[in-house]
Length: 178
Image (cartoon, rainbow, N blue to C red; front, side, top):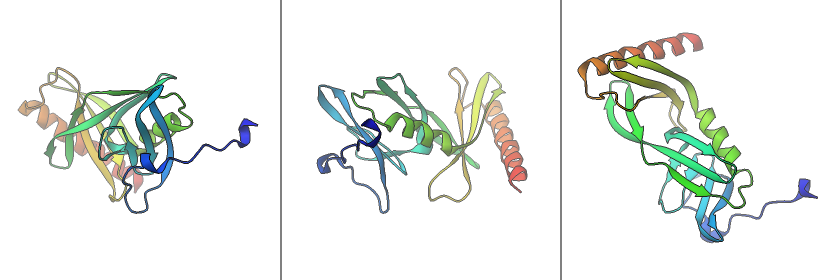
């Protein structure tokens, strides 16, 4: 009866160095045949093979499940502006999951739940996505901007427009919550 079949516990050798009160939600071995490592989803983020740290749900820009492979695109913090961070895509990492269990669902749910606001806006010479995310242990929302490819991120006009867009989005979400 598959309904009552329990998934085996995460083997101790594959358990990442969890933080205090951090809980494992699900896990899956990555690889084809001999495991290349283990992906572990916790209430705070995703532990990927070969990394000595977790990626917070708020630092995952995109996660795509193909039915066999999970592709994760983490964020790189490029610069800090007044009231927000400028982020860029780190290289996407793809993992073949032989027995994914509930891991892809957990990843999608947690990444989606971290997003409180997202909007793509035109800026001079391109576009930027303004995003507000919930970060565990941080009061309020954390704001980021990810410029679309080809947008000049150091252009003073782009930065001025982005500053205005983030301020307007913050005001709109604050007045909506009040």
